[in-house]
Image (cartoon, rainbow, N blue to C red; front, side):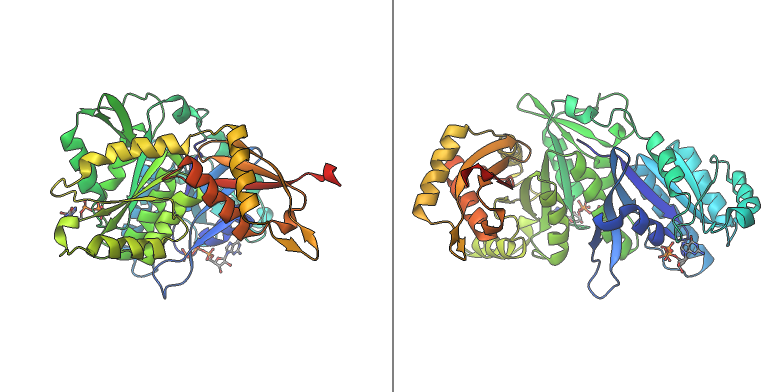
Length: 441
Ligand SMILES: Nc1nc2c(ncn2[C@@H]2O[C@H](COP(=O)(O)OP(=O)(O)OP(=O)(O)O)[C@@H](O)[C@H]2O)c(=O)[nH]1
Ligand SMILES: Nc1nc2c(ncn2[C@@H]2O[C@H](COP(=O)(O)OP(=O)(O)OP(=O)(O)O)[C@@H](O)[C@H]2O)c(=O)[nH]1
């Protein structure tokens, strides 16, 4: 199910981080930016009542001169307009209304995206309410007074936010066409790859009516089948500031991956795989998507008969959490092997939604258990009663055991490997849920 995206925009020091913490609570994902730079929150999963959503902080403004603040705020707002279902615009009752707020409000109003105007630092309603009314002048709706620090007004604000969620949040699922996201660091060749795939194949204008994000998707037909490439407009976005670009590539990855079935993670062969690639790849892995690692610019490096091996080894090492991912070596520039991408997507899609029969599954597991004894602790040995697949996308298995505590991570990994050997499942992560069944006692 595709989750709505809520983006937070606002000037430095208005309390974005504080609010972000309040909303995301324990579930916050701290993404470490450029090494050496402070830990930076970029996205988190949040929920209110029965709705869950992805919260993104478009932030990253360095308080500098007024001009820079405004241009960076514009950039934040643009990112929010492109990626979010609802934009939360945060202002500060103590700083009052400033010119930059008005300019950003204009941009947001023109975008026609739902905007929730929040006035923070209203620690006392009695004292500050008269100042809150001033924010009506922004012309983007009723200002909602909150105090992020003392957690006042948060519920009213969340009510207002979820009111704007599209009712058809699950609509993507009704569309049978496979959805593909292309993610990666700045400059690795994502746009070039889309253009290459577009160039070779017929383009069809997206005809999924209704949702606001459709305009940024592109449908490509290959071998009589249509594939929807997600957020291709975002790929064309350029920023001048390096840190912003990196932040943006993470925001894009989070919002695009959420809606995708298969994710192409593009890596630049001339740079080799890096920690930043791992951070981006981790987003697709966490969400259980089908994954293809695409090493681009293969034309631009010197090669001998060990080059592919060396690159593969390095990728397996840095992206060690996704040993199942397929790796392709391509050139968006020359078109080398790009034609095979669709076949690969097809295969990964099938594996990501493959179901295996319970009977065969248990035969494999029984055999695996016989070959390698389950772990034991203080004289008690793990017993595995039964395994069954309960879901697809990603394939999810429940393992019933006598005692959860005895199920060691390495043993789950062992079973996973045996299941993979038997059934394939290339290109997709597998999820295992361990359940206790007591009746054997
Ligand atoms: N009085 C009061 N102070 C607050 C409130 N929320 C945040 N602050 C303070 O405002 C300052 C800025 O808060 P941050 O959350 O860091 O603001 P930010 O918008 O993330 O700032 P940047 O990282 O510079 O963009 C901190 O000193 C907070 O303690 C509030 O509700 N009331
Ligand atoms: N030699 C070579 N250069 C490439 C290839 N693919 C892309 N490039 C070049 O790499 C640069 C970046 O390509 P883009 O397609 O703009 O990369 P991107 O990942 O979309 O970049 P951002 O939009 O900044 O995230 C451009 O100068 C391309 O011409 C390739 O296969 N081989």
